[in-house]
Image 1 (cartoon, rainbow over the protein chains, first blue to last red):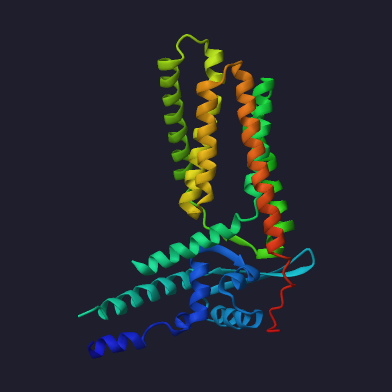
Image 2 (image 1 turned 90 degrees about the vertical axis):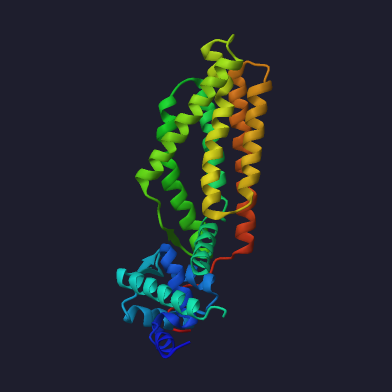
Length: 105
Length: 208
């Protein structure tokens, strides 16, 4: 692997690359929207952990968070923004190139 | 590409989660019994088309809000291109009808059109359900769809080929039998679902 290959590893989107956030982004990429409970169950994260990562992704503009009340109970729905979708696709392409460059010699 | 395969796996899991409550089977069963009664009564055939749109969707949404979402959460899946799906369904139904017309001409030439139609209703419904379950399997890859396909096709073929008549009764019997089968299957799935998944604690997004 050359210097360019190493640099490309350093350039990947760290916001998405964190494992918990990658799980959240992967799930939101394949659905239109999901609520907090669904994501928590699919990713097996705790409330607090998911909440923390959700805030970071929202601050980065990758996900949209809508809070409502359903039968007087708080209900949070998450969906991916267009920007988030583009970022995820770029991350996926970058990772694909990196993995291919690491191919068996 | 393994990354794409992983995403497909995640999507399939999300799809399976959304249908694990048994409501699809229960409503399908009720619909089949209803269709059977409409066919039997020879009245209100138009309601066969309107009923699903008027009652099934709102009822399904209410059931999911009441029993499913509080237990496993809510997910809205990405929908397919409606035009493409509609055209696909139309093409499939036309092929099925053409096949059944050919079958009728080859094997049931001596019967009246009235008898032929009623005789072929079980096989027609079996093919319609086959189409639906094949689509469902493509989304979920859930092996229970093989059971559903097997049950509907085998009973549809047997009912069409061997029912002694009158065929109007045979149609009702097939639809009622399938209706009861799916309602029972859905009920069992629902009971297992609510036992395995108690209502989740209230959302707390403040990190506690």
